[in-house]
Image 1 (cartoon, rainbow, N blue to C red):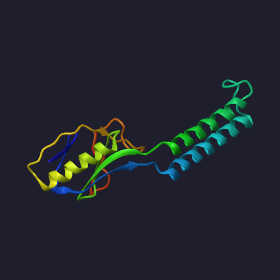
Image 2 (cartoon, one colour):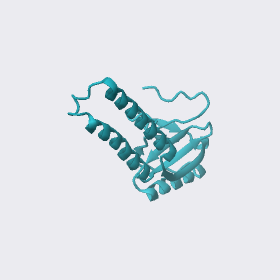
Image 3 (cartoon, one colour):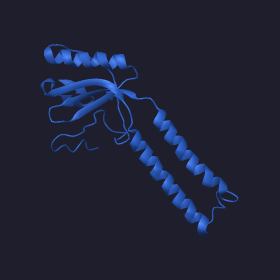
Image 4 (cartoon, rainbow, N blue to C red):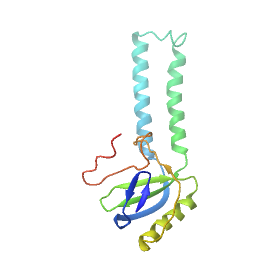
Length: 157
């Protein structure tokens, strides 16, 4: 058995193990920023047409510059953030457990240990890793992120 947090994965059920750098979808980040900029401009235009921004700034011009600037800065940070090293373990049903460490070499070593354990069922090893959180996961949930699989409803908290 491979234990990832409280989840037990039978070794014979593992079909794929890989350590790689996970990078955000640049088009996804760009699309979300573009959507945010559009929403900010629409809201600011609505306030400028008849609303009162005087509670936020004397003439309202500061808000018109600050909101888009924050969105553009967040776009640049997201686009130029380096990839995060992850270890992905995929099961026969298409579900996947994804964990991370700062060091890519340690993840490769753990991947090698998992593959060795598949071929040698009497092997034992222990490694402490961190939960991998992407933008679409529960940041307060368990260590295992289940993606795909037939009839998978995830882990209910």
